[in-house]
Every structure is written in C-alpha cells, then in structure tokens.
Image 1 (cartoon, helix red, strand yellow):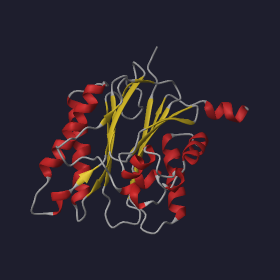
Image 2 (cartoon, helix red, strand yellow):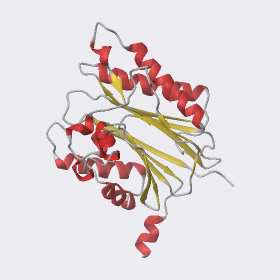
Image 3 (cartoon, one colour):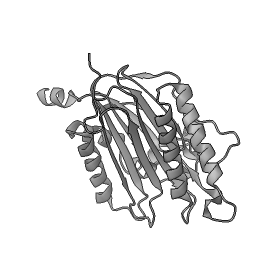
Image 4 (cartoon, helix red, strand yellow):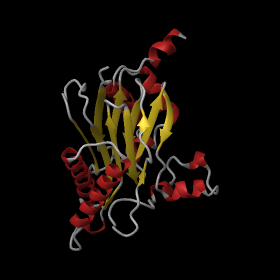
Amino acid sequence: MAPEPVQIAMSSRTGGRARNEDACGHWRSGPAATGDGAGPVCCVLADGAGGHGGGDVASQTAVATVLEAFAADPGCDAARIRRLIHLANEAVVAHQRPSDATRDMRSTLVVWACDPGRAEAIWGHSGDSRLYGFRDGRVVAQTRDHSLYQALLDAGIADPSQLPGNPQRNVLIASLGSLDGFDPDVLAHPYRMEPGDAFLICSDGFWDPVADSDLEAALQRADSPQAWIDELEQSIIRQDRAGQDNFSAIAIWFGTPDFRTRIAAA
C-alpha cells in the first residue's frame, strides 16, 4: 500500500514588532509539489530572542542547522532528533559574539519528523514554541512549555486561566543558547500516525491568542493545511493586540482528514 501523502503549509508574520525573530522551514524527500513521496520529512520552527538583531540570527541559525543536518542523514528516531536539537544549540552558541547583539541571543526550537512509509512521527523541543497533535479534529498531544509559568502550573501554584498575556509566560527556563545543562525534551518512542492526523507547530505569538478549542474548530472547517493557518492568522489579526508578537506556524496533514465529512453527516 502506498504511503499517505504529507501536506505542509507554513506562514510567518511580523505582527506588531519591528523585526521578525521567528523562523521556520521544512525538508522532504520525494516530490515536493505533491507531497506523496515515501521518504522522511522534517519540519522545524524557532522563535529567537536577543534584541537588535540577535533573535533573528538565533532562529535562522537553528532552523538552517537542523534542515541541513537532517537532509544529510534523514531519519525518524529519538536519538537523531536529539542530535539535531543539540547541533542547533551548538550552532547558536557558536554565532554568539561578545561585542555585538548576538552575545545574549537565544531561541526556542521545535523539530518534527515523520516517516510516511512507516506512518510514524517523532518530535522534540526546547522553549515555549509548541507542537500540537490532532486526531479526529481534536487535540490529543501537546508539548510542555519550558517556561516559568508552566513550572508554576506544574507545582500547583498558578491558575491555568491566567496564562494568556501573563508576563511570567515569557520567562523561559530552557532554550537554545547555552551549552551548560542543555537537555531538550524528545519523544521517547515514535508516534504512530493514522490517516487524517494533523499537527500544528507554532511560536508563542501564534498560540497565545488562540484557544485550543479555536484550533480544533478551524481545523474542522479547513479543506487544506493552508486554509487552516489562514483562518487562525485572521483570528489573531482581528484581535488587534497592542505590540502583537511575531506569529508563525507550520500545519501538517497526514493523509486527507475525513472527520469533517463525519461531523457534517452527524
């Protein structure tokens, strides 16, 4: 049986900031136009920090490093994903210069890879950029933010309803930019995909203004990954938040979702 197609859409917007410090990209073997190649696929997103140019250098360096290394040795296992994230961290550190804006630059990172032929995906991350996994139009998997606020939530001394817009949400306790104690979260075993599964990788500027229920509702209405991202982007833009952060996302569909047909029939 032929592998299910993997459809990918990406977008990155500056929002209300002067500079876009997000970066994203993907690499795939097989026909890029149709997405029906059986070979491995890699998607990566980073959200840089550092100011005056350091953040965009960090995020672009991280994304380029991951995609180049994956293309040289494609595969979908935990050890490889961990290595890719460590390589990206080392590259960011190597680009730091004490004499300019890059000296304190940092970046989040999410790396997702899949083997369409085996119907398996795996991912890892550092920071508060997120990966969501959807099945039957509902969120069934989500990365855990490496942030002070998430640590307070885990300790039971913070209110989840206070997360949107909370300043503590932006205080990271892990990110790319330091070799000491760097330990990204990586899925221990491959995630078994089913036709119709969807994934969303996004920076905090994208997920913060949008509730999980809105992610699901937009997915259930969308007829393509691009349409899904477009609707969510318009929702963020309509909110017209002062100082809206950069917002970026990668939408991935494995096969053709049929939950929209089932929902309509119901």
